[in-house]
Image (cartoon, rainbow, N blue to C red; front, side, top):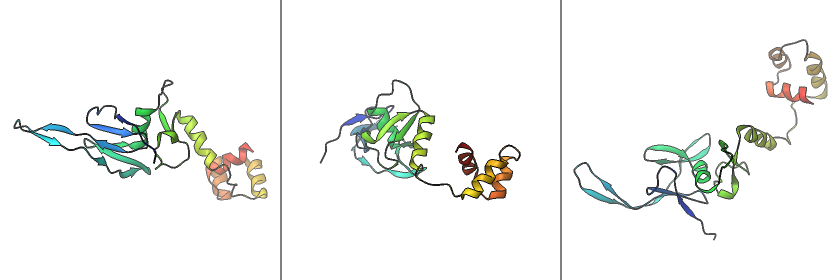
Length: 160
């Protein structure tokens, strides 16, 4: 079994930590009560909650956070200030640090398109020729309706 490193969650130092394999835990600490009494809170491993767009999340101080973003912020340097965290293997539940990388939104879209690159158009060659002939004379919405294909498929045909 591989060992994992733990680091404080940015903004929650001393309260929560995240591991390099995507686990989140609360830390032992004293919690003050308005009456002045302090009680000991025992740290524990937090269970990932419901998902946002199928990403695993966790609730920290009643605020929901995506776990992959917590891992990236803690373990992956981001000198170029890229805004998006990408899962290299396309598995949104694999939050191990080796599977994550900082990317721009555009880089993330390109990566996502690679996942579907092996799929073929849902048009036959005759339909493709018709769409290419209509390109300059007919609005895209009309082509989509006429041929019963999506806008994405129309643009894919245009680009071939």
